[in-house]
Image 1 (cartoon, rainbow, N blue to C red):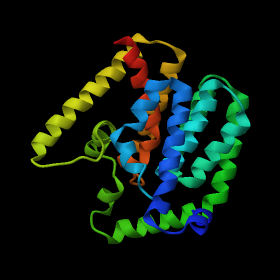
Image 2: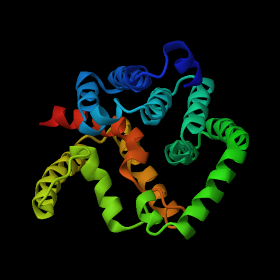
Image 3: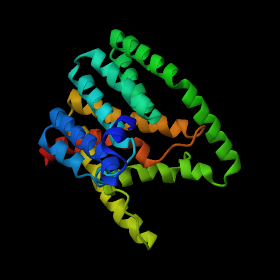
Image 4: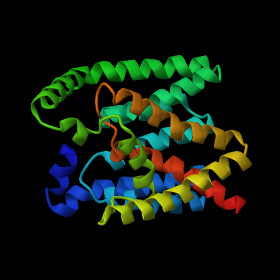
Length: 256
């Protein structure tokens, strides 16, 4: 961002533009993976529309991880895959959950060369950012001990925060009163989305669908478990999974 702001300044448009560009770039990569409808479901996802206008790193890391996903699924250049998972981790430490999921899947498939090479990239990148990670961990512990309910803000591991992830993935950041009406509408729409996912996974038993379904679910499991120790179970920290969700939904459309 330093280079960007030096070139284009600190206006609102200049600060928001990287997120816009990276979201469009992610849409293109999603199209390459899953076709037109995948890109449509991604680009018009309410949460993506919101965060593609924010001057934050979430769309940047989503782009990096989606490019990594492309090379992972296409079984192409491992060096480029390693480069993009490293860029993702340097951009946002929460990307570790999808990165670890990539590596564990390759280990399950007995692709030991891929696993070892990219584990090396992961360790090297972690060492580079370890001073920053350590300082952030210390700051987080201090805040947790001194600020009331700070763990709620960060996203502690509980059922509510876990359920909010698919809900926010489905309807975005919309919230309104009365809450019973919100939960009724949001829950119904989310249940429909989950039904489409379940139907797709059961009817389309391809390697692609099985792989992306695993890559959608397993990072959430890892994030939930880690949040018992370091609270971070918030929907926006997993926004990089929405391209995967879009690919599954587009595949489900073909069965309807």
